[in-house]
Amino acid sequence: YPLRGEDGIAAMLVRSIGTSNYTEAHLAEVIAATGVTPSVNQIELHPEFPQAGLRDVHERLGIRTEAWRTLARMKTVPEPVAAAAAHGIEPGQVVLRWHLQLGVLPLPKSGDPVRQAQNLDVFDVELSEAEMAAITALGRPDGRLFAADPETHEEM
Image (tube, rainbow, N blue to C red; front, top):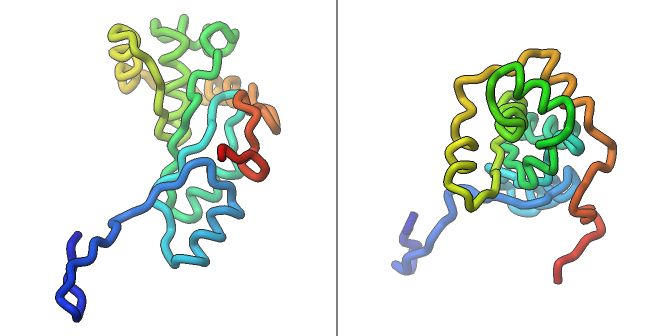
């Protein structure tokens, strides 16, 4: 939004910010330094790495959790496969629905138009508590697939 300062010069202000791979410590640092809480934090999140603690931090701070690496080779794991059979959908759709029921915004990646349509067709299904628990139980303390801990990994 353009605003004019006392000098008449237009300044652009940001309506909201987003972060990627920020840990609780990173979030605290940016909030302390700017006084602004990010609207969204995009993190690696999938059934083998559900990041419950960081999702709790996000909820407490009002930050939307956005997931990358959403499917994480889950299409052949027994728990999503069983739930898919029970609901008449694909295992990938089960995992995307798992994300949504956790309150997470999944960002699946596909160049296949059929798969893209399937990825969008997850709103008419509701996983049971038992199915959610079985998929969540696949989690491991460090189930990262990318092997890049944000506390130590640097891209550049």
